[in-house]
Every structure is written in structure tokens, then in C-alpha cells.
Length: 247
Image (cartoon, rainbow, N blue to C red; front, side, top):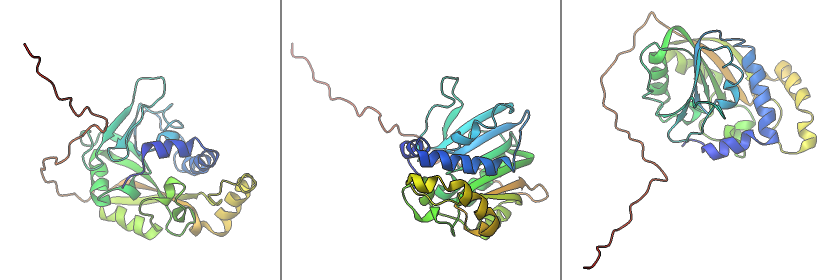
């Protein structure tokens, strides 16, 4: 079950969420510095991180799963948000250069089908970065953050899943070594935790960040299928019974 869009927004507007965003963004910058004239898709709730890349991209989209819900983004500009099903993205083959998955894979109903769909829409040589809760980390055990929901992964599980879906794992990074505490005194020590954690206990980071490249020397079987899913507005009108006027 996906995290709710309201809960995700509230988390990233909190002090703990701001610090978590900064930690993950620093790790992402070690993998992707600039994306000049490339097409980027954020899948899940990647909005806090897309802002750092979209200035250089040709185009940036924020794809949000139907089970999660969507918000308008960028704020005050023409919307680049789409409400989607992860296994049936509204994109043609080989049309995207980069995909950033945040708060996505751990909630996917069928992770393999989701990654196969991303393989389809990525251009030859396209790259994917996945941010997932680390099975060994403390953050995956605490339910007051979005990283404590869904299915956490170990590095081996994530690597095997990527290889099974025709991706070649490449560079990796870690983030969130400080504990997910709301106590201000503890949060003030986050820089020390991050610095020491990267050196001494990288296996126990809060999230794993793994980059992979679309592999081309193998093919994926393609089968035509009809979508079994439809969007149903949660706040749609249920209908009001009408009364006949008496003459």
C-alpha cells in the first residue's frame, strides 16, 4: 500500500523531513551532477529532489502513483505532474533519458513489472536511480517517517532485482545515518552522524541509493495486454436523487 500524498507532504515540510531531504540530495549529487538537455521522470514522490535537476533538463515530469495521490508541481507554474500506474506509464518506448524513483519501489505492487516498464520507456543508455529504505537501517523500523513503510531492501536484493529486469547496476551511495528522531538536540548532531556513518557503518544507512543503466544486449518479451485499471475520483460526486415535480 502506497504512502499517502498528504503524509508525504507533511513529512517533507517538517524539520526532520528537511534534514532527510538534504542528506539524500547530497548523496544524489554524487551520482548525478547535471543533466543537460535530458528528459527526466521522477516516479513516486520525487518532487523534493527534482527541483535540483530540472534547471538543466530539457523536460522534467513528476509521475505519482494512483495509490499515492498527486499534487501540482512545480508550484505556480504549468503543471508537470501526472497521476499514473507504475506498470503502464503514459510514455512511448525509449522516450526518457533518466528516471529517479523515490518512495516508489518499496510500495510497488509488482516491482519486476514496474522496472520492466521503466526499461521500456528509457532510451538506449538511459539511467535509473532508485532510493529505497535499507533493510538493515534504523529508518526502516520507525513508522513515523515514509521510509518506515513499504518493503525495505538489502543491497543484494536490489542488485538482483535490477539484473533480473535487464539493468546493469553501476554507482551507489548511502544516506540517512542520523537517527530519525524529532528531538532537536539529536538533530543538531546529524552532520557528525552522517560523516562518521559513511566511514564506519555504511551498511546501516537509512536508505540505499543505486544507479543502473538500461542493458541492451538482451531483450524483454513483449506481450500485448489490455489495462485492467481505471481511475476513480475519490471525491467524485455520488449523484443526487431527483424528485419529480407535481403538476
